[in-house]
Length: 277
Image (cartoon, rainbow, N blue to C red; front, side):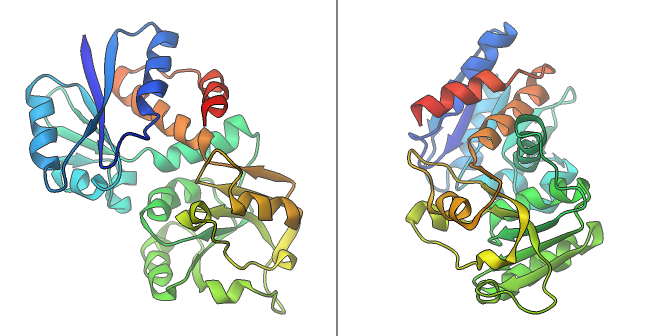
């Protein structure tokens, strides 16, 4: 039986085994998928051992995505610019392939599960960390009118804006700039929260006046209770509010497709996951 796994630290909270088991059942694939706790500093050895013992594919989560990027012998375009890898597998020639499916998962969730689009829209992305870096290129392929990256440390947002400006209209601002609407400022059509602050109950100070009348808000985070960002978005008048459960399942489906060549149906898995989170 083909073996797959997810490596991380911590890893006990991972829903990946549940998701991939559901995909395997649905597509009639015979495989095993386990969560593996890996010690800090041990990822290169553990991942190498996994593949040398016949493992077929790995998912990689915090804090090893950058190490996986460094280990991959070939990188997808998304992974290369993201500086992070969440999916590893060996190709027919035995070369270690590294992909990042996070942004693809986000876009698929937005388009397929929520029947929404960012084409021609002004998008605000909160945070300038690894999560933002992983989603920007797939978002830019959807041809938004603009993307502004907002971060507490403005210089980090500016670095990302420069890096991705070759792919579209990308700018940067500080969180302080969001507190009130300024004259001539664009109305925001989409806000995507890629910061973990909402999981700690912290709310980025954004003036509701900056939102367009049909604004949509998406939190990459998810929790048992609605995140403070999603709560704020509803109160601010967003017409749609989404959390990251769909993205979680869709990025897993992208990994499954890379490994097995079959794209699983995600709708039922998303619904079942919502019942247990």
